[in-house]
Image 1 (cartoon, rainbow, N blue to C red):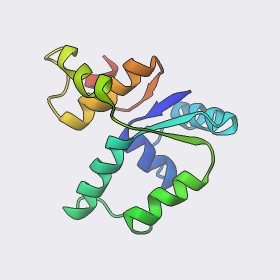
Image 2 (cartoon, rainbow, N blue to C red):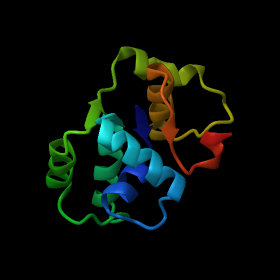
Image 3 (tube, one colour):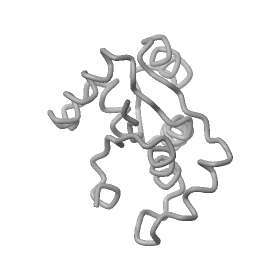
Length: 123
């Protein structure tokens, strides 16, 4: 199982060429196994980006999410109490962006790899 960072999720579903070959392979492998995790917080972040006109999707956000859900290979991970407090323990040098911190905490709490291009997170 892998967790997709928000941009990786967007690039995967929108067939964006910025998704690296390595990430594409990892996602394809997990897609076949039905083991792609997505933080519910990513959907909040996507909706916010669309609302602020910083992101344009192939359809409206609700439809976009329902298409992902219908794939049958994704697990939507809610932000539970453990995930909500876990970012407090993350290093101060990591992003101060709450969405990034929640997504990192989700991967850590689930003990699964996070697919991200973000160098601060990967460090």
